[in-house]
Image (tube, helix red, strand yellow):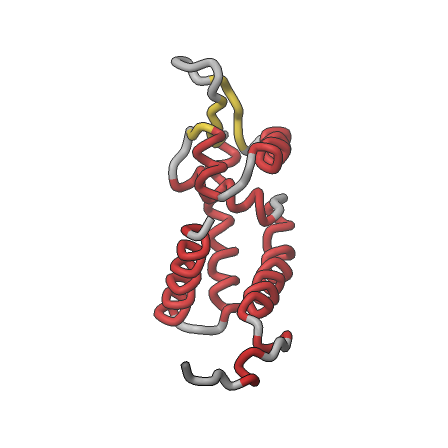
Length: 150
């Protein structure tokens, strides 16, 4: 068996993939915050809204599954969106155990303003569409691989 180069196994912060992803995630959060404040949204709320703009009137469980959020995190978030008048929560007609989330008119209208957020993030990322798509795809693949290990 070939002997591994000991430098290959040095533990240094700047060589850690997890730290690079962690730092990028924080940079995204800092960039989104001032863009979302005028919309009255936090980043997690924005993700819920995107999910509903893609497919309105979903069960809470479907939203949680899509975003990887448990009900303990998602429920207060949805409650705040409802208090803001952006979504409504109601029991499913066919299955009273299910709660469905739907956009209100105000929530639907907010989508137009969110387009500017997407444009601003595109400028902040500072790379072309192809490079951004390649980064996104690589991260999705990484997440899937890691989730398969669970």
